[in-house]
Image (cartoon, rainbow, N blue to C red; front, side, top):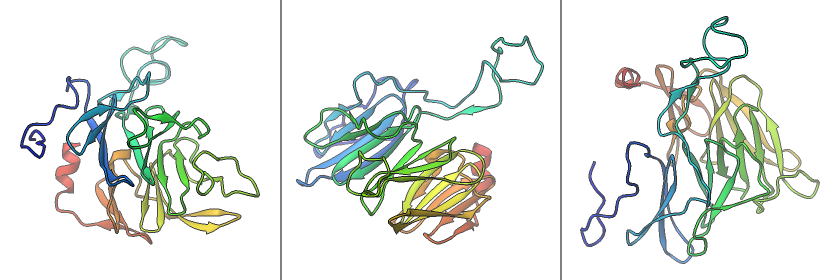
Amino acid sequence: WQRRLNSSSTEIAALYTDATVEAPRNMLGWTANDGSRHFVVATNTALYHISATGVVSDISPTGFSGGSKNSGLVSGYGTGAYGRQAYGVARTGVGLVPTPVASWSLDLWGEDLLAVFRSDGNHVYKWTPNVDSELVELSTTPEDYQGIVVTDERILLGIKATERLVQWSDSEDRTEFTPDATNQAGSLTLSGNGPLIGVAKVLNTLLVLGANDAYAGRYLGPPFVYGFERVSDSCGLMAANALVVTDTFAMWPCGRNMWTFNGEQVSQVPSDVVDFFIRDL
């Protein structure tokens, strides 16, 4: 790793001071309508904006508390083997359920940044370049989103993990999620088991990945708006940040294999390095 340099070959200031508690997990860059360039880096404790001149600003919402830098194991009630220790008392030690690292889901609504902090998912935030000093909550949006994406139809769509629910807003209105005969807001519960983990836009198709399966979503127009079909049931996503999307395909690891989606179908990708990858995990 090397420190970033600005146009004068001077080191840009560090994003954060304590690497033992904070680490970057997501980033996004874009150009605003006025031509200004913007870049955000999301860590487990904050969201930072970096201007084209290298000025770093913390744009986290007021009162934001963040989450864990590292994955861990759940402890307390319900963990451990059946019958161990006293009934009704939180278990000592840790169980076998992993907790994910704290991370964000980021996308663009025109020039506006939209963000969800996955560790709570209770808020959808927006940030307008050259207008907002920090993230602003969109108070009418649903809670508990695991991930969000802005579709080609200018609709804000999100997934809810344990409910296996895909929920979307009206077209051109990122604050209207109540279905009505006069709008395109709606939701759909996907069949299957295990939580939904990731969502992405691949070409003109929406890819939704659960812990075990994959769904392809396509715009149908009113009254159904979106339809989803299962395209695989053996290629679940191991973690939200493990999904990588390019202009023409998406790729992610599952089990001991790599998988790709080209907008139509899911395929296994032969890899000479997957054993090294799994061993490192």
